[in-house]
Length: 318
View 1: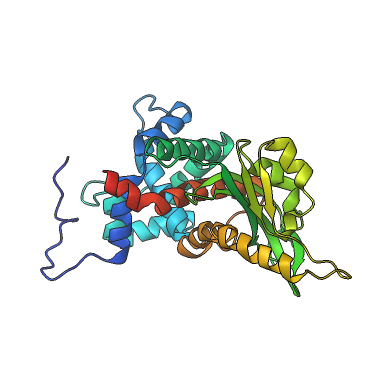
View 2: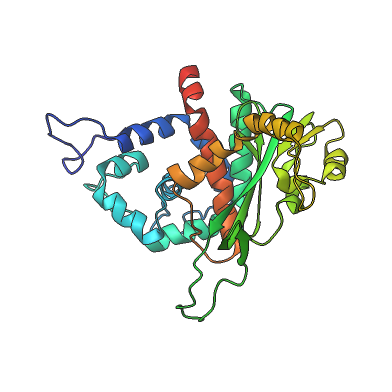
């Protein structure tokens, strides 16, 4: 390990670690960097000739994770690295020896991941890593979806909204954007399946993509009612615990309401995953145009959310 230059050494006697520093230290210890780097290296550009060598894969991956955790754009994460000693220490940059990668380099790395659809691979590798450490997917799956808002304004170059995003009505409120669909393990609360659609797509349309096939129980809200055939086709041994839906001329009985409340005690666990993605990581609005880019972002966010939710067990194991 190289010795720090005076540019990165602090002489503040009464300084104490901030919440950001504690968070980055925990994530640095639980993210399987070598496994994730191995997925990117085959497509990462190699140094050729006497020109400038590309930035290291792990450093760029760490920088990409900062974007995920703190919802930073390409220019914003460059500025944040110059501003924050904790972030520079996490990425491994010493301003006494080298500059921060510029926003063009950061953008190209993100495009590289998107072009080769590495989001799904990174998500799968994180799942395999957690399984090795005893956090395996069990026989119960909870399915749900949440709306990720997109800008509805047409004050842009093309004078139009994102054509791949749509509006939908929830309650008495209209939303414009996309839907993030996830399948969550009922025991560990880990996300094992991810899908993305435009906001107007019905939740039940991607139910088959959220099941891993070995379930014995499936939970979901009333949006998935009437999908018993889909569950039986893709998870033959599963019993449906989808909440009963009321109809205009047939309200729920007291017994059905009681059963729904019982099911909700398990089904509510899926909201913990959305809490991490939308509130802790701050991904309540899409960052890019188009479903493909935002699906890639969602896949990596779900993988990092699994690590965040499991960090205490992983650190205890370490």
